[in-house]
Amino acid sequence: MAHAVLGKAYLLALLSCFGEVRTCEGWQTEEWREGLGLAKSHANDALSLFPPERPLKIFGPEHLIYPLRRRRWEDNPTKTCEGRNGFRHWDVVRAMRAGKVVFGCVRSLKARAMTLRTAGDGNFEVSYSKAELLHRPRGPAYVPVW
Image (cartoon, rainbow, N blue to C red; front, side, top):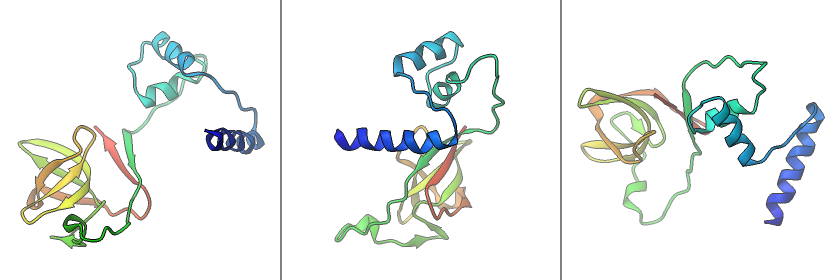
């Protein structure tokens, strides 16, 4: 707990170099969000922090951010495959299954299909032929929430 408090103090000190920094509690954010009639989400909580007399312009879709974990696990058969059919772990892909388009990160590569991390499902299985590579991240993977 002490490390978190020190980290928070350090972050606030760094941010204060750029101007005035104000903090609030979670209950305040909830009250402001509900006052604006917004649904509960991280993006709407962030929007509720700004005063209503200064409206924000919102553009683009909301994104999920996945940190890349590249550590090798010994004797884990699902982590031994580097790539299959032109796809690698953590690739951002657009896939189609049952007439539905989804976006996600490659979670695992199997013989006939791959599994994606999506906004709605952490194990969304899709055929290689129904997937299209959009991006191969070198840092965190950003997946749009549609």
